[in-house]
Image (cartoon, rainbow, N blue to C red; front, side, top):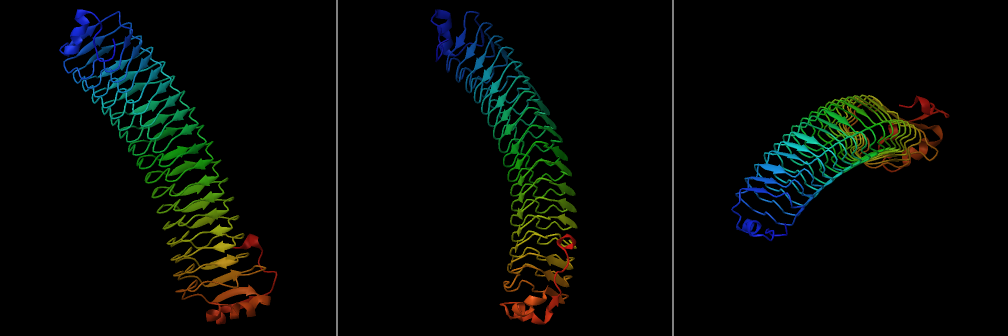
Length: 437
């Protein structure tokens, strides 16, 4: 059928009048663009030998409920968009589904595409009743394919290697997803899947932004081959209590923001934790980052029950990194050379700080560390300058220990002179870095 309807015979030309309700034709092999566009009376089509459906071919056929195109291999863009009474689709020979092909088919509940390899952008977006989809051979899902499919409960894509941005976002009933061969996954892919509990993406090497954001029921995730976790990947995953990232080298900004149930994190290969990565992880008690070299701003901000941190190779602590970590008693920073603005503000339980090679401490760094009593500094260059208010509001601070050869330099240096009566010498060599808190 050519674009715009009409097949050349008297009967087929009658389609142009858009009054037909049922259409059968075993001679049609191709349905052109807009062929049945907005045919409000059309309820069923039977095209047993059709191999291709064009763009907008059946768009807005609001009463279309029955479709039989068993040999169709290609479905064009928006071909069945807004077909609001279409409940099921079986396309046993379809290889390619174009963009928005079934967009907003509100009562479409079942789709079978047993040999389809590619599903285009928004192909099933806003199909709010879709509960079952069969895509065993699909290798690629484009952007927002299943976006806002609120009825979709589970999804298995055993051969899919690529999932585009927002492909499964806001599938609010989805409980499990299986992507065993997926190596590339876009942004917002599973965001706001509120009931998602189980995820299998074993071969994914990196995540993009907001991948699992707002997945409130997600309790554990294993990404054994992931080396890079982008910003906000797990933001607001409030039930997340376990994470397995053995090869991860980078944690992006806000990655675990407000993951309230997370209690322990071990990232043996991580070298950098970006800004706000663990902010408001209110149950986090322990974190092991043996190879981390630097932290971003506010990386552990308001982790109020954090009591154990292992950062033996960290050289740079950014501003507000541990602000409001109110029960943190000690921290290991044997290789730290820079401590940023307000890095330990309101760490009320912190009693002892040892910074064996630190050369720079910024303003307000230890402000309101009300239990802090002793500070040890031991560097060849030493911290001969600090900013104003670095040690403000430390009522229990009695001693700042420095090498004996540098006592005079410290007492006369800017800002240190105001606390010269607390500067105390110790004999070098002092405590080894292995004993440093």
